[in-house]
Image 1 (cartoon, helix red, strand yellow):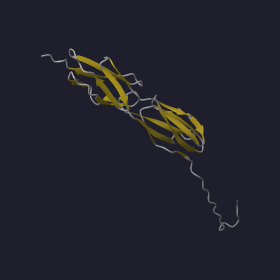
Image 2 (tube, rainbow, N blue to C red; image 1 turned 60 degrees about the vertical axis):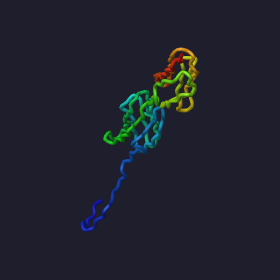
Image 3 (cartoon, rainbow, N blue to C red; image 1 turned 90 degrees about the vertical axis):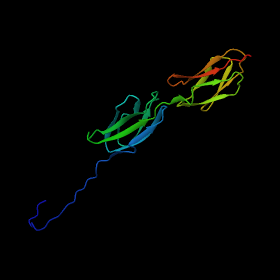
Image 4 (cartoon, rainbow, N blue to C red; image 1 turned 30 degrees about the vertical axis):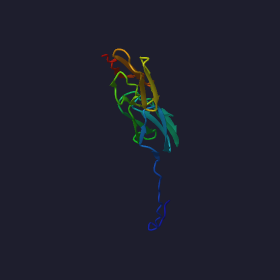
Length: 193
C-alpha cells in the first residue's frame, strides 16, 4: 500500500506459532518378561518411528498429528541387561527427532546354594532359594528325596538311609530359555559297628 505522505507509517506485526513435535517419554524401563508401554506423540505433521535393535517392536511405525505409540520389549533370555533406542522423526523436517532410551532387565536364574551333605539318619527338609525371572519347576532323580516348591523356596526332604552312601540330584528348570540348574545331596551311609 502506497501513501503519498511518507511520514505516515503503519507497522504490522507478524507472528507464527512454532512447530509442535514432542513425546511424553525420553526413557522407558522394562522387566525381563515381554511387556508393552505406550507413549504419546504430539505433532503438527507426519512422523515415523524406528529402532536400532530387533527385540523392540513398535506399533504404529508412522503417523500424522497426535497419536499413541506402543513400544514392546520381547522376553530377555540373556543374563545381561540390554538397551536400545527408539527414534521418532518428523517427516517435515528430518532434523526434528525425539530419542527414547529403552532399558530391559537381565534374565535371572540362580540358587542360594547348590549342594549339601547330610547324615544317614537325617530326615530334615533342606531348603534353598531359587532366584528366577519366571516360573520354574524341580524334579528329583531319586525316590528317597522328595521336592516341593513354594514361591522362591525349593524344599527337598530325604528319608533315612539304611544302606550305603547315596547321592540324589534335583534338576531345576525354567521354561523361558529351558536352562537347568542342579542341586546335589549326598547322604552318608549307615554306620555299622
